[in-house]
Length: 362
Image: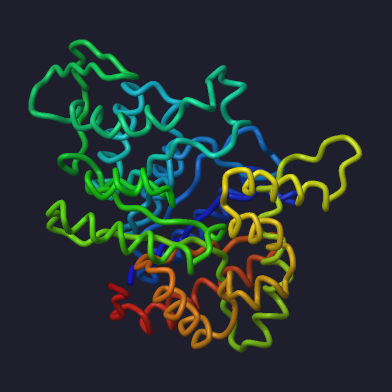
């Protein structure tokens, strides 16, 4: 298995943005020391109550500058919000600045609120994301200056000043549970994965199909299939539950829609549930409207909380059901004190990773 530090870079009401970023670098430096494989951040916009990370390229440059071995990347660029030529230039420069340690996630974007202030149509986002994969390959191809004409992008005779270290491009990721997107990823050799909102029991068959398609297309390497959730490790199960469980149930409050005038917390939960129900994602609707109940989270093992042995056992079981081989750990959540945060990361790195490193779910 492989292991990633994952961060929404949640805003902290008792910290300045600068202090929050400095804490983030301390987390990455410790992960680098302990042998984690990756570190990823999101690209979110316009929600100071939620994420303070709207520039993932800066995160990747800052994180790679403070580490020696860790592969720091994004999960991912919201492609429709970027001009494709500018984004291709940026990815190449980030890869050069990191010495070829950059991992490049691409996503169409999940929230309409990211799109409206930019004047971009939220309903037209998947096609440009898919097309950008071919755009990158043209931009970094042998024919230079390059030209590209697609359904969404047109570039005539552009010469990039900088090409990426990694050829033909940095490793690509596209987190998705959508069958169409998974088929596209399998055909194009793109790593994938999913978040806590997706039922692992339902996810397993989808990603087994993804692996079958991947192998059918003849890729020479095994794909990474990621799973992202909250992780908290302490010396004992009792300490972990006492310090981590209630906080874990508050980790994703920022993903709820903003409260409208007169709305209660329960109203926001119901709006969230309705959003997923309307998309036919009934299991996700249940998870996303119940994840603020600590008992629900614990009983369904949606978060991995406990002693090193307990957490390792939970991860192994979950990966067998949910069919993932890369765990993306959100260690910093709610108001978890930094001493507990860093102890959790250290215990995970020193005891959980060695217990699972040789385990291969597929």
